[in-house]
Length: 223
Image (tube, rainbow, N blue to C red; front, side, top):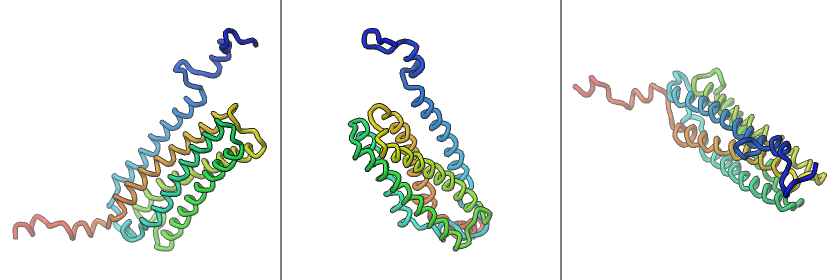
């Protein structure tokens, strides 16, 4: 179909863009990420509501290893930089850069998952399971779902990487890389929130008995 005045025909424009002027695929991704915000928000809120209410151990202060998780967090944040570089290389049609940065992003994501597997195994050896206490239930549910999101992102990145090996990724389909980047940045941002609340804030929580022993009772104040 011929172009008129350098513009796409109305039917093509309507098929590609929404009334907001945003590509319909990008708008769909933003809607999905918005719903995922509510999903993770509910999981984080549940963790915070039940924080410190486990009646039996092990408690966060007994097993949380902040230095190890700090390293994995740093690796995940570095992967966001690699994702930005992958999109920039795609827009410039830098085929070598596309392959390099897509693989680097997936590789750093895999390192993060490796750290998480190591952490989960250490918790298991310490006696913490999903069914052990409230801490175990809320912690494994929240971090497990986040790990599943990261794993899905790694698969997506590897698909793009193998397409790039065949020369099928470039400016003509840069939106595919951009959508993957939006998803990847989202899981990184969610992890920043999780790391702050579960590790930096809640990582020193002990059981309810400890809090009772450290807080003066009403009768002791009267004595």
